[in-house]
Image 1: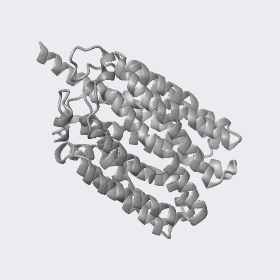
Image 2: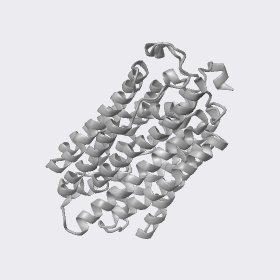
Image 3: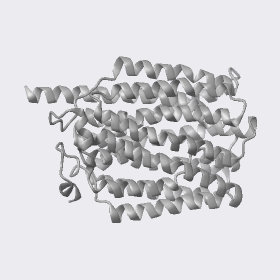
Image 4: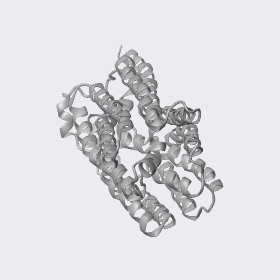
Length: 411
């Protein structure tokens, strides 16, 4: 009976992965109808300088980081994670289209803050629910699939926005308002398709006991290295500004954004599978080196044609890191503390987002794009070296279905 239950859980788990992927697809479709157009909206319609863009993006992520930590902690203590996932997506889906009403930069800041707060509520419980849904040796593939569907939405969103604008059906504000349709569909999908899953490594203890489960010593240096990398990983809005600066026509910028997400989508599942086979650390380092090379290329770029090549290569960085970094968190953390681990991971990234984007905006305004992108690439290389030196290799060897002792995890 027990093995039959495990088999049923695995089958239902992959259905859950597809359901959560569908939610991500619809949510990103909505987001990316807005996001590639937002820098132009801020700079041309609302008259905001680059440093304001950096402050808005960074502040929204950093304020949300505290909620990511808290929601992950409480998702371990609650018997189910779906409620927090639903609440987070509902908040974001309600807030995003309100940017259509903005008449000042602070209005955009308020909308982005509400959107990111929703992401803060949902991210750690959703990532934990994904880990609960599949077996350890399939985590890289599962996170890669979720990222693939997310990026598929990021492809469709700009195409929809570009079509609505190009055919003269809607103006910028109309496109922002239309983003409410897929956002509402994502919330319905959570209600109808996503379900709770039994947590692997369940020992019969009450959920409140999760607060007493220690995270392994290897987890802290991993967070510190991720934080260092994040300091050089500013908002991708600066890539869009660089594209405009290098002469990419405004009507073509959403298409460059689509190209980026096509490569993200195509590389996410292969990147996850590679990490299942060769280990998380080697895969992440490969991705961070790609990131450093792309930023060096953006610093040296001198014409619009360079943007298309660099955006395509940049997509490989996401395929090698986005899902893999999360799979590494799931490998390191025991199941009853997994929400807390994902909360801490996302919190570290969120805290680093504000100084990263403000620094990028400051360097851009005072020293130019070359210095700004060069600094980000240098920080990525530093983080790559430290990840190899200070953090143990990750992969199936760490992804075990038991609550392991810290000494076991350090081997």
